[in-house]
Amino acid sequence: MIQIRPFETQDTTSIVSLILHIQQVEFQVPITLADQPDLLEIPSFYQQKRGNFWVAVVEGEVVGTIALIDCGGSVGAIRKMFVKQDFRGKPYHIAQQLLDVLTQSAQQQGINALYLGTLERLQAAIRFYERNGFVLLPKGDLPQAFPIMEVDTHFFVKKL
Image 1: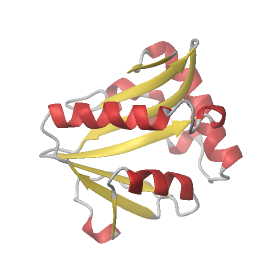
Image 2: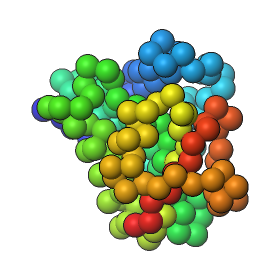
Image 3: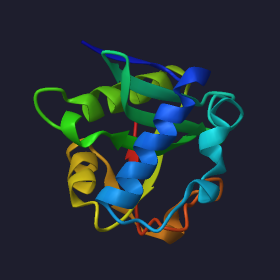
């Protein structure tokens, strides 16, 4: 059974391991834990104001993550959307469940636009976002409060 729930402190090691493996080993993204200090400060970085950080757990194992940053006003940023390779797609639909939980939370809290950044090489992720109503956006059209990650090349928006 898949459980989607907010981050708890004991998830930190599993989250760091999952995300770094996907970034560095699967997709050869030149990024380290030192480049992402937010991963060691999830409560103070993500679980503030209307933001949150959710994990997908299967039989006690963290297999997916997603985070919402409250950028102020009616704007939210999606970060840290990762799903362990063995749990992607059918029959689990973990990415969809994570996105649905985040979107519902954002809507309930008055956020009416979600923005995200990703890399061109992550074509499956880009197709997933497009299927979910996200539209490609020029970097210059991002809201000033959007936290740009240096490695991101493609940016998307979805109006809620």
